[in-house]
Length: 307
Image (cartoon, rainbow, N blue to C red; front, side, top):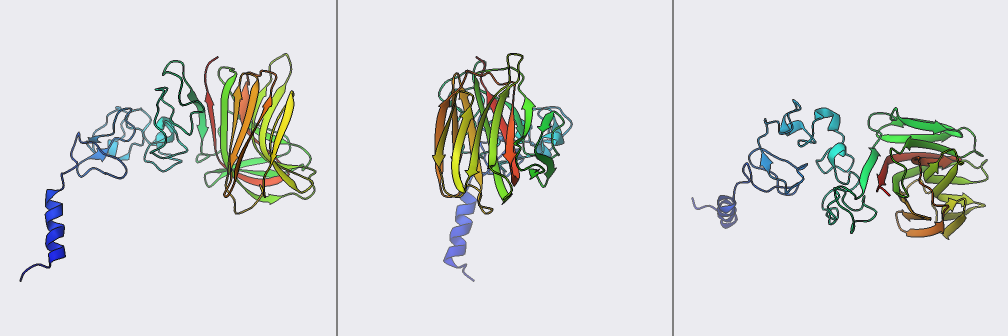
């Protein structure tokens, strides 16, 4: 019996397709026929032996999310689902093709606040990232106003004092005037007893000269919602619609650049950005902030460039 034309065509195409073999270029959309794709390679990903161990950490390539970096299953968390472990992902919040690393500082956009300038030695660096898949990190500090716990890959905040702003921060290893803090969150509930509701990110300088804080948040006061950046030198806001929708996903970013503080947000159907003057802080810690809400934060990302 003669094969139907579409079957014959399919066989012909299959026969002509090259095998993606060891050493061949590969990607999430072009997987290996032989071996596995080394997605964490700093160069173009190629197929490698599935049972090999490129980084010598005892974890075979086929189950190592960071096959170029020792760590094995400790690197198995993959926030953006791109097949690259968070510990070695040049942008752990956006799967490829995130904007490429045009300035060669090993941080891809949208994680890189300045993707057009920098080098591997002097460019931006991811100094902290956590997707809260393994609990609240031991090196964070929680202060005032509420409780933080990790559950289901989120840092969950619940209010204990609706009139106090709470923070969850991590120490910055090298104080710098070039800093970006990013987070993603959902708001489950607002506390009507609070005079202000907010969720966002914060950076703080706690050195002996005095504590200075720059916050970037979605804020509700008197029933009006705004994106707010606030520092000791000034406050700037942009009215936005419904920043506390339980069905919404909010991505927020703060940028400290010398004596300027900027705040940007993308929500389900809107976006905005604001800037204000600062006192030229070089923050010593940064993290999450919330007040009079029940909120779930999916990740915290801190990127820094030396002065």
